[in-house]
Image (cartoon, rainbow, N blue to C red):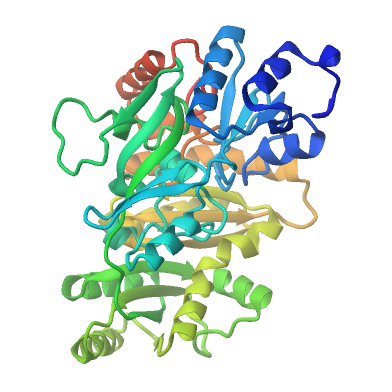
Length: 470
């Protein structure tokens, strides 16, 4: 069926959706269903009934009320950059895309807040803040395509968490349509508000299972000054942790990332970027700070020299220009895009920072023992205890066979996560991919309460069903 089907041939649900948003904003053609019915995961085949493109809060509310009335499911769609299957529609759901709800308004220079519709691209907000002499600090590789609504729904983190925290720390207010079709205006931009439960925070990270985020009041801050980055090479992961502890104790870092030699090799071969220095090292750290004065640079260099003397660092380079800063960051930020050609099996896991070395070692030993011929790519955000484990698919192996083999070892990985008191999903959400493993991070009592919360906001179960839990 296409968007131009005659009225007499239309499914009653399609016809009702067209009455809400117009016939040109309801799409049923195969290409649109395929692109808007999935996210970056490649493990699921999309099969939505339709994709609808609302332009107003009233239209969103009418869609949700129709879903309750006609008993169909709704799946929210933002930039579709998620990695957990949270935006996948594969059972005849109606996908609600926020592509046309992308306006920024109500900028307040005193409160440093701005109102964004759910479809505002992350980079769009970053650019707007920059034009106003301010800064939106939540940043990651998909900033050019991810949307604010999706960032909030998954509580996106990224590369600056060590200094600026997660998305939830920058959400001053939310306007949502609950699964029951009610409009809630939550917190209204207040910095201090202890009048009862903060329902706003329930919707942050809920992956669209409680309702649809339509509008957000986002907090901005001052821009950082003269950002400077080191890339440092280490012989082992203990060296990475030692230099993290040393720098963190004496400087205010804006980022601390790590990646393996295998990851660097892939990026250099794919992008043509230069290696940071000639000799290969097993692991690399990228740390960033504000060079506020010449004394700051001197302090950073002194710390670097101390780390070399301790044997924690084998070599290093410090950015001397904005271009060099950007290129050093690309060594880390280009990893996900580069390895996507190998259809990687991804795990986004975390523990407390002090336990990261043992955590990484245990996981790597498990995966290497189970599948010695699989290539493993490590990178992540050491500053917040978040590791990204990527197992690359051999070229001669079928995708389904590969994912089945990796799925078998996932139980062991998540048993290690549980042993270390960690999370099976540090920043990408649970979605479809992780829901069978939620019990490794959350107790039965917690999960039971989550289901009760879901029932309160979405009594008929129309909002993104099957995600997080069944």
